[in-house]
Amino acid sequence: MPRKNPTVSLEEARARFEEWRQNRKGKAAIPDELWAAAVEVAGKEGVNRTSTELRVEWNHLKRRMAAASKASIKSAPPAFVELVAPRPQRLPECIIELECRRGKLRIQLKNASASYLAVLSRDLLESAS
Image 1 (spheres, rainbow, N blue to C red):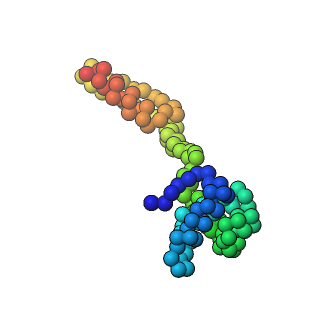
Image 2: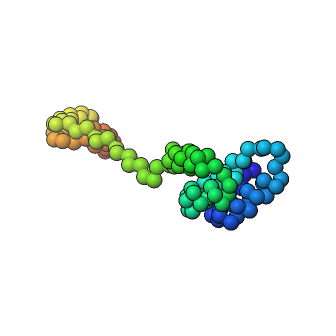
Image 3: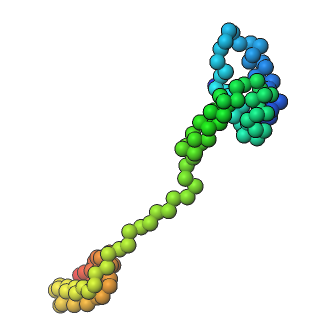
């Protein structure tokens, strides 16, 4: 499992690279874990100094930094998402006529929402029954 260390110093990265170079077999490629440490250090210390100190090719380090910044931009979740609720539709004018055993009721409303009319109708019918 790759080691995740949020603050890698140049000295620590150099030590890790040296240990890897002493223990590698043949011309093995630099592991992604070491590249990640190199990219992090280069972000703080600069590409020139990091490539010189870690003895890695400047162009490879620069490309890794570009790829890492693109990946972090793509994978970063949005900090704030605004949800805009749709505006309730308003009726210009509405007439409600209710009839029950006790009699009739007529209500005339202007600019009332449909949800308000539904609640009002239900309440009136329940209270009249």
